[in-house]
Length: 456
Image 1 (tube, rainbow, N blue to C red):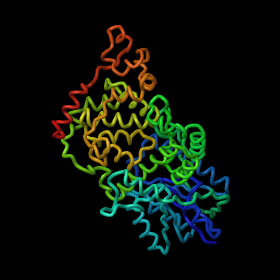
Image 2 (cartoon, rainbow, N blue to C red):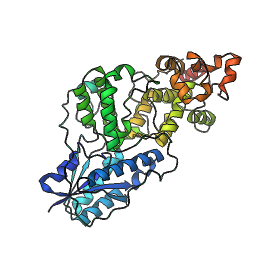
Image 3 (tube, rainbow, N blue to C red):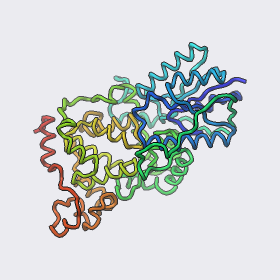
Image 4 (cartoon, rainbow, N blue to C red):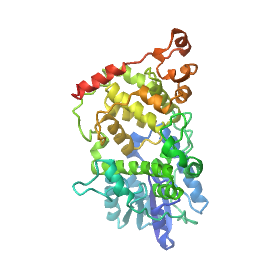
């Protein structure tokens, strides 16, 4: 009996899993393997560790229901994969492709090590993306730097067929495994963190397609309505397939579904940028020669931003939601990022790092390149735009419901006045408790940014 190893990475599911399907072809036995990779310890934030524990336990349960089990190891991923392959006498390893520089280095190291032992590595595209990086490119470059032309070509790519989950999985005996991690283990987990795992993800997807997708185009920026899919953590961990999401959304039809598909394309867009320019994970994609305020000189402002005490209610609401849920509404992400990078003129990497410390969907490509988009050092064609938090709050939270949900000090402030508490009467301000004054005037922040960018 031939044996294959399937290395699970950011694809923790059984439905629509090309590496697993290919490994099972011909009646092979399979070792489903997840390695807790020491090389990625920098991204092992408490919220993601907790969500990962849910995902691994759910994956193991799904495998056991089909006669299999999940093998978990810790250490250097190349060493552990080679060790498991030797224990199982496997002749091949299957895994999903990924876009980051680290992932591609891991793939090269693993291929060399396996081939040295007479084994083959099969890397499968379109597992963690709907359209793989490099599938569509402009005539003059190795990647698209602007989303709209990318999206036109991306939309013309027919997605591959969605694969059913296997009915049975045979695992050879004698391959040792560590205990599955527990969600309760990591300290510092956000109290409102959502449940992880493929089972939870598929339930959320079905419910959203049934009741939320139709209104998505009109309501995805509605802060109080919370009308986004909240599927980003499941896409990050691969408990849901982006290919399946595109197909099911298009089958549902309507402007809401198409707007949702566009968001999946944005995710693929950032991956093709990072695949072509891996340095953009930490360096400006397009430098503006900024002389950012440092963490030392802007320490108090940065701390106020992190704690949700800037004096701008919609910014503070977003930052408090992030800390409580390990997730933040997309519109709030844009507003909080713009406030830090442009109104406070603090290096975007400071904000990106804080987001990665808390976001359960903290994805290198999306997080870093969205921050660069907002900071004006990325792919935004209007790099000097500044989002006014008051104007944005009036537009996307007109009655202040989102603000009151997360900033209880302002719960009794009437109507839209909640967005400018510094303008309240003394009597009304007495009801806001210890809510702070703004850390900077918006006009002052804008003037500082324009001077820094040479836009006076």
